[in-house]
Image 1 (tube, rainbow, N blue to C red):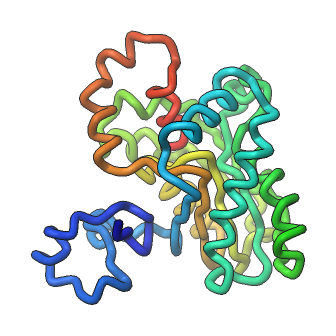
Image 2 (cartoon, one colour):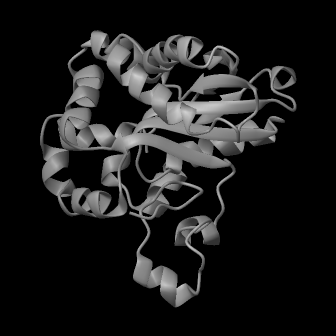
Amino acid sequence: MTLCVRCGEALDMEGVRFAGQFPVEGLVCSPCRMAPPEFERAVAYAVYQDELREMIHLLKYERMSSVAKPLGRFLARAIEMLEGEAASELLVVAVPLFPAKERERGYNQAVLMADAALAELKRSRPRWNLTSAHEVIRRVKDTRSQFELTPKGRRRNLQGAFQVDDRAALAGREVLLVDDIYTTGATARACAQVLRRAGVGKVWVATASRAQAEMIASWDVASADARSADAGSSVAVWDAG
């Protein structure tokens, strides 16, 4: 499978040939060509399916916080893919939840996973200076579920959703943004935009899992049924966007 070097989307090789993109190294998907994200690169441990999907669902919807530790190890493996590209000193920032949602859930699953990943990386990459800085970005808008929205609607839904208060703490720094899953990239793009406007030099993105376009298309087809059901594994993916 050939992936977009920017966001990790699986590429349609027929479309790539038609566009004349060669060699294979350095290929970029259509969305990243047409509207380049303000992050440098997004990496993920594995595709959102099977046991990984179930683990994320348990963490987010069944309050099984203990699952954050193994998911954090997976996230650490994804972060290691950025070694040599990202700076030797990074601020690590988990995608924030709206405060009311975090209180309801009891925690921010991205924070738990990020902290578990940092603990793992202190052992595996002791010379890499990764510092937790989750408080630098806040979610100030209680957004609608991304699941029921079109791609354009998802982007609009996140406009004004995130805010940075202490710009001085970010000026010129490189930030690693982490979350449980990368779906359409709307959330990663929105956070990266806010961080860059606050003075961040570069934003990198790492997630434990990654949904591919064909998976997202199947969820869109089933969205009417999912909206009428209780929060389940198919709905869980849209928390990250």
